[in-house]
Image (cartoon, rainbow, N blue to C red; front, side, top):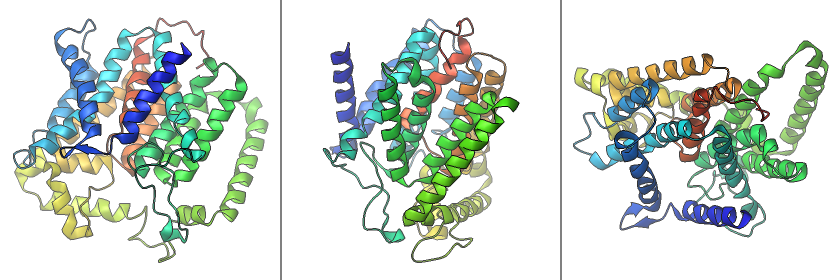
Length: 391
């Protein structure tokens, strides 16, 4: 059993490590994810034993809006690539409904455990990352943030944040010893901290806070107050001894002070530029979206070929009012589905809150985040489960 698990971990770890490389101009990440997605996607429509529900249809319609835009004829590969990046969530959700609750929990545990274990060889300097982490030279330090096996700093931070959060919640039920459970949390927490990406930090804090909201009772207030005091003291101690953290929290660098143009590493400026692009678009573009032409239209306003760093404004620009409306409808049905069930409600609410934070602060799709989100939402269809596991 352990040998088989180790082989799986090494295999997927190797793929993730080398996925930023290209074969004939095509990234390995696109190749293996396309193969992994296309088979279950075909099964979803033609041979699935589980009925496709409303939230799946809505999400698939939203996904199609990524392809149907004014830029699709100019950059068809980019539009199709964006479409496939959206599918892991809905496929994980659909197949999570078919699995038994215990098997579903084991998969979620193994995925989150794999991500945390992958940090260890990098922390021990046994392996060097192929890509560059967050450039910390702008904070006066000649080094990079932690990235591990992932392609970029945000992918590393967001994936670590959600994996660490999920592992903390369910890992105690599957870990063979308390010591290994706590050690892995320590490695994951330290790695997340060293990414120096605030989006990941925010996702972790929000997830844990929302999940533990159900445990807050009057009699627990003294213990919570003590815990909060310890956390605040630890934070202040680390902040005083880590100049990089000071810069990241205050939103400044060694080159400038906090200003409206630099808020959120420029996110406010990017968001406003995105609204200007939308306002300047034609009526047809406002309805259907401008697709990946967003990069060229943002460039004159920001001097960067980027998106808006906000998932909601990105969707509005790229998919138009139709795609944006479908995106909001999906959010509504997502929340209603969670609130209507008692099965793992706070786990799902924590995941939903993290999803909102991700879209507000960054946007985009992150493979492991998406599949964990889909699997966790599938718990809403497991009402028959008798709570033998502490979730």
